[in-house]
Length: 175
Image 1 (cartoon, rainbow, N blue to C red):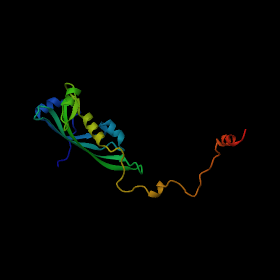
Image 2: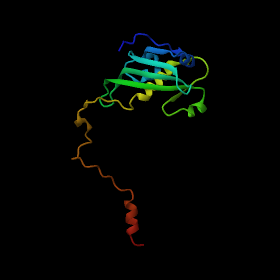
Image 3: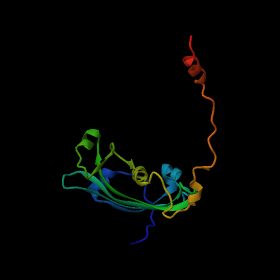
Image 4: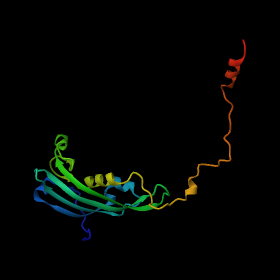
């Protein structure tokens, strides 16, 4: 596979690109994707993107392709950085509104846009965020299991006096 060396443009006209059958291959700096950059330890990596704009058999303007990145995230067990490969497969249809989006087949996700240019980075960022795991941790045991003990069983819990004990005595005493 050829290396990704070209930085993708941020603003594109998806409908025009679909009419022309444009293919985009390049990369996006993670630092340019603010929400992804907040979710990772280091934001100096790149997202490799391969996109194809086109028109399907039904006449819908589509965007398909992949976005992949090797990100450094925090392991939730040991709180140390770890490498995480995140990938997304895009299969979108460019639509005008929610009404058109509701008519799409399940195989296509809607990309609701008005006329003109759209932020390509935004859709790539959304796709990557959807594919980030909720909790990241190393495959191997990175924390000793002894750390997860629940306490010393030899210590008995401290008993406190029952505040209702006085009521019990009153209830049992004759009038």
